[in-house]
Image (cartoon, rainbow, N blue to C red; front, top):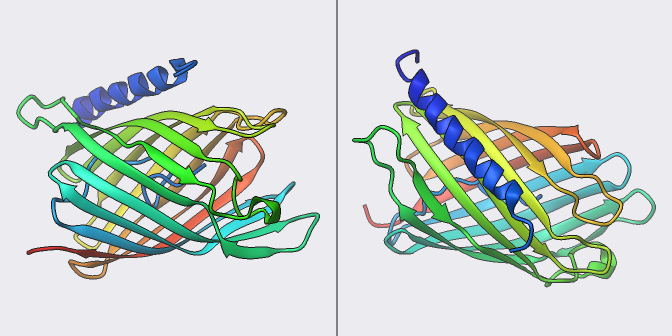
Length: 262
């Protein structure tokens, strides 16, 4: 651990530089990288895939509860360094001032492209990816099951690993249409450690700027990890809350099946 400390500090500096860059975009929370809000830049291996059966939950004491019960994520490595992604949610909305609603939510699609690989010889160069995502207004916004407008995310993600330690970070800009909506920024930073071949644990901190007129931005954290049941079957989990913002509680749970040629 002590021997790796300078390397981890250099990676942290790169993460903070990417966060500063993201905050600096003036004109150009979704769960990005299960089980965390912060995503990693590593695409699924070529001709391999990942299927998630998952549920995410968020509760704001002032507005109510939002969840997916469940949602389905599929990632596929269509080419070297290129991953296609789709998420299909069954959304649950329980506002404080009206009845609960349940149905299809906004479908998400994206393409992750890694254009820089991690350089282990130099000891500092991280892998870097872009991962544009589009949220399609397939959910019924009149029932609180969708945005009612298209949303687009333009992020940049970085990652560096040493032994059992991995850190990744980055962020980007959400194009967020709607009469009272505002375009907003998301940035996050995560550090995790592989404790064994079965268990990996990590923690992240993230910040989102105001998404609508009159709303505040939020800063929060999540703690979670991965349990490897076998080479192809995994459990992912996390939980956290805001430390500054609307006092939202967050949780995520998923079963992941990985597949592809051996």
